[in-house]
Each structure stands twice: as C-alpha cells, then as structure tokens.
View 1: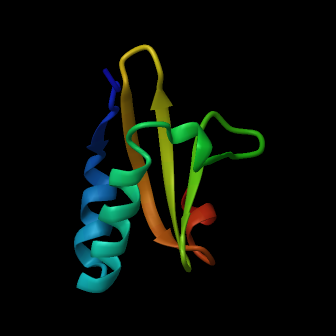
View 2: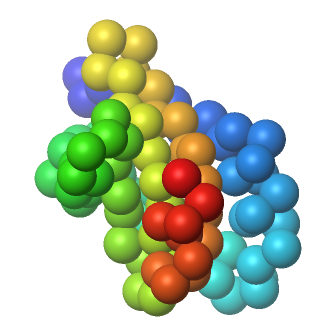
Length: 87
C-alpha cells in the first residue's frame, strides 16, 4: 500500500493562499496533491535552513517535511521575489 503524506497549512500559509487568484490556487492545490506520495522528488532543501521549497511557476511554497509522522507542513506561500524575505 502506498503511504501518503497529510498536508497541513500553517495559519500564515492559509491566509497567503486565500489572497491568491483562483487560477493560482488551483495550480498550487494540484501540485501539492501530486507531491503527497514522494515529496523528496519534487522539492529542494533551502540553503542554511531546515525547510524545503516547491516551485509552482512564479510562486514558491515553503514546506517542512516530517517523515516520521508522514506530514507536509506548508509554512509559507508567495511570489518568488518576496517569499524568501519573509523567512
């Protein structure tokens, strides 16, 4: 049986997600659904930090992957020019 990760949005990420256009929200949801089986294949580790980044066009999703609990915690979502400043 294939084990899937559960995706949890932080309060901050939820607010950022709600502010995005509907078409971008749909792209983000489809990409996040796709990475639930093997997230390591789709994300890259952030330099000098414990988090990972996921590219979705012009947008980035900052994630924390908890392998022991099978949880993907979405920490922040934003445009690539702004996202890294907020960390």
